[in-house]
Amino acid sequence: MLYQILYNDSPAKIARKFGVSMRALVGANPAKPTTIVAGTPTWGAIRVGETVNVPAAGIVGQAVPTESKIAAIESLMFVGGPCIETNVAVVCGVQAILGVGYDGKWGNDTSTEARKYVSNAPAGCSPRPAWWAPRGVSNCTGD
Image (cartoon, rainbow, N blue to C red):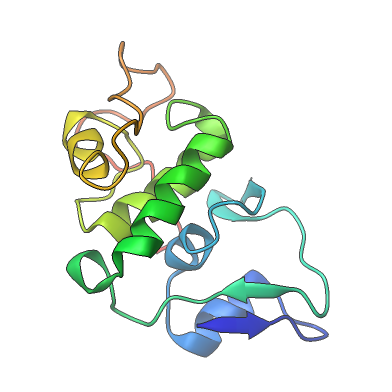
């Protein structure tokens, strides 16, 4: 759903208001610039009157319309792709929208799922980026 930013809103307040995680909120707006604050992905800035997408609580994977999956993947491509550390919050969001396990690491499984919707979606990051958390540890934070 679309939500218009109000005075004194913050990404954390919006996420709490609608019962969604920060990761899901940030991921539902993949074209919006992000930053990491205290280990949590968030937006660089918001302004009163701005409209943002708020995902329905608990809706991921198959329940997400195909158009939303395509838009999320294309937005990730627009901001430079999945292998750039500053895009980890976007990768987490795209993975959640696709319904694959989300860990912020764009590997072959995520790439294969993304290519079902966007034929030229990025390949899995190779070689494995040095900034990725160790195997079994997620790069997605803020849940």
